[in-house]
Length: 184
Ligand code: PNS
Image 1 (cartoon, rainbow, N blue to C red):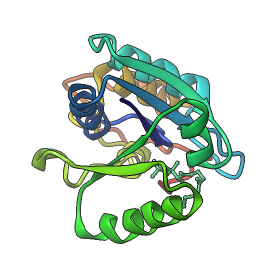
Image 2 (cartoon, rainbow, N blue to C red):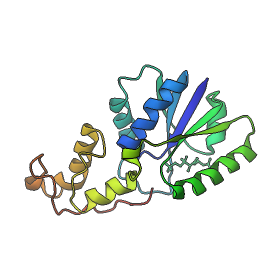
Image 3 (cartoon, rainbow, N blue to C red):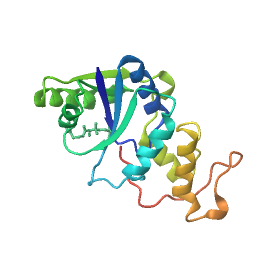
Image 4 (cartoon, rainbow, N blue to C red):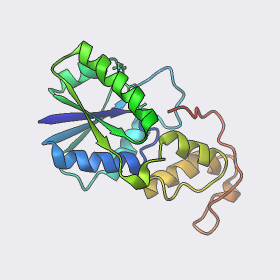
C-alpha cells in the first residue's frame, strides 16, 4: 500500500521526521511530497527542501521524495497512493486537518486520510516555530536535523553577519532573517 505524506516542509522538523519514520513502518512505500506553492514566500526553495528531506531520511528504505502542485488527491492518484498521511499535534490542528480530510474525501472517495499522533515531545513543534526562533536569533538545534539547522543558520545569519555565525556554545544570536514568511 502506497501512502503520500504531503506538506510544505519549510523546513523539515524532527516532528515531520518522526511522522515519516512511523509512516514507513506502516506502509509499503511512503512518498514525501513537497507542495510547490507559488503564493508563498518560503525560507527554502523546493529543491533545498527536497535535499534536506533526502539527507534526513537516508536510513529509510521505503521512502520516495517528490514535489507536486495542484490538488493533493490528484497527485495521490497519479502516484497510485490510497492514503494521505498527516500528523496531528494539538486540538487546533484537528479542526483544520479534519476539514482538509473531509474536503479531500469529497474530491476522491478512493483516498483515505490517516492521522498519526505526533510523539509528545514534538507536540509544540512546527516549521513556523522553527523559523520564528531562527528569525530572532535563537538556537534551533534541538528542533530540526543537524544539517537543516546548519542550512537555517547559513540562510539567516551567515550572509548578513558572517562574523557572528552561531556555534554550539553560542547559538543564540540576535540576527534578523528578512524576507521569510513565518506562516506554516
Ligand atoms: O505542511 P502544510 O503546509 O500543513 O501542508 C498542507 C498541504 C500541502 C497538505 C495542503 O495545503 C494541501 O493539500 N494543498 C494542496 C491543495 C489541495 O489539495 N487542497 C485541497 C485540500 S484543502
